[in-house]
Amino acid sequence: MLFKLLADSVAFTHLLPPLLYPASLERGTQVVLGLALLAIDAVAYSLVWRRRTRSRR
Image (cartoon, rainbow, N blue to C red; front, side, top):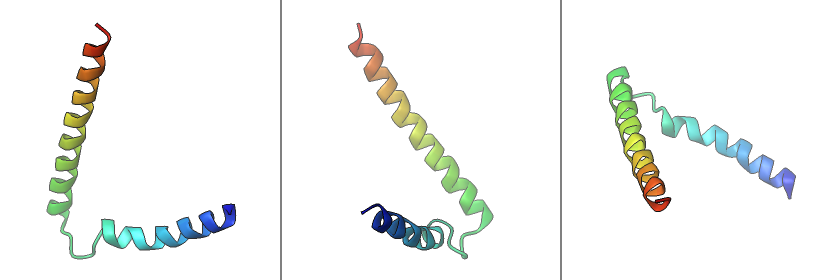
């Protein structure tokens, strides 16, 4: 079971980078997408943090 899981994860790591980093993606686009992802994460974490602090009161 463990070996199959490791084999699947190794196969998956060969497929993932081309999807995440396509050759046609320009540097400016990468920066914009990265900043957008950072903003989405910041909003999501702030919402979770706010809900957790409110529930403790």
